[in-house]
Amino acid sequence: MSDTVSWVLEVAIKPGELDNFKALMEEMVEATQSTQPDTTIYEWFYSDDGTACHLYERYTDSAAAMIHLQSFGENFAERFLGAADVTRFMVYGNPSEDVRGVVGGFGAVIMEQLGGYAR
Image 1 (cartoon, rainbow, N blue to C red):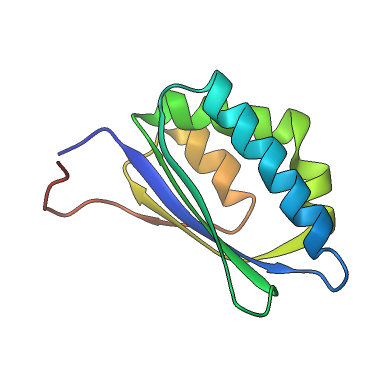
Image 2 (image 1 turned 180 degrees about the vertical axis):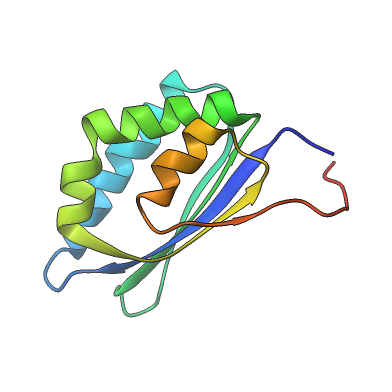
């Protein structure tokens, strides 16, 4: 089994907030890419009508996920939650208790790995 932790975060973008949300996304992507080398996937996907966004994120391990969550909390959470509401949060892997505690505050569902592999 892998130590990786990944998740899909689904959000509803608040009316009138799409431009702010997209600008924040650019800032968050730049910060994550430049300061978090153990974030291996960090992708954002928008619906055609601009009302929903799915974030797909993958970390080498719980420590990397925790670094990301701490950065999010310190730098982006207030603006992110001002522009969007979390509608679903699915976490995959076997995250540490620290990570579980943080994502649990957003209503995350933890799906522990039963089998399979990633290349």
